Image (cartoon, rainbow, N blue to C red; front, side, top):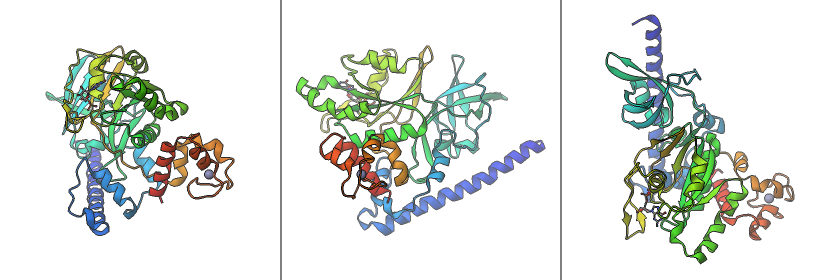
Length: 387
Ligand code: GDP
Ligand code: ZN
């Protein structure tokens, strides 16, 4: 091993030891907080499905990292252990799936199975994502990942146990399509608001796709669809569609053509069905309807990228029930509710938080339903949580 390689190895070893220690400390903190603060959830197992709910319940018990800590971990160019610094895409491939210690890369129309080096594998969920541009090299017959190119955008959520660390859902996406349904499963506006914050932070463009419109009677359409108007007002395209009847799919196709897009949302809303409807040759497994709950069963467990040709890539992501609460501070929370800006100027106090002050124009407009009460509720809840 030459000197340079030795130096690099030592550097990684040092980093790993530090990261491992930090991870262990964080996990211990969460466990202790659970044990100490809320006896009613004591003994509940922390799982992939319930961690956010638990953290929300315990949000107050933990010290929140500062925004600068957070941005360091969540920014599109967040440092990773293994990120390369060249921007040249020549000779690079795109990661289309990631599994433990391995990833699959699409390069020049060829699918390559590559080994992920241990220094990346150890924190793979925050270091490597579907959509990443990478270089691989063949070392004595074994194909290895050598470089992760800098990212344009990311879509990330907090890691279950290391709350201030990001877990990447996808990288380099131009558009994130939040798929929702108004019926089966019902609309969850709070989830939309949280996704919008995450999308905006990661640098991608948001689109809301309302699937399963075929399930609605004309009266239900008239009643339900206006719930999405606040998002149109924010400049987020809202597309009504049905994977079943094909309605709206052309419009959706226009939004994704020539771009890399990720489909996100609650499981059962029809993400896989939409991908299948856009390209019949995909033949993805979809969730069969669970008649008891009226929702689909979970099938997608990891993100996967599909090449639709002509520079169009679509990423299917695992269903998400709860989206982790970002550790914003109250001040920056405003940035994600731009519709409050103008009315704010008429609030009695110039630094009005629109939560408990009298003569608050924002609250008055919410009461008059000129501002969306659902959006305001998300704001007020996040504001409380961030105290
Ligand atoms: P995913 O978990 O978001 O990927 O959801 P799936 O694509 O697996 O779909 C969940 C269930 O909803 C399946 O039973 C689909 O057949 C059904 N589904 C998906 N899209 C539509 C739609 O547009 N209309 C109706 N009626 N059912 C749909
Ligand atoms: Zn106010």
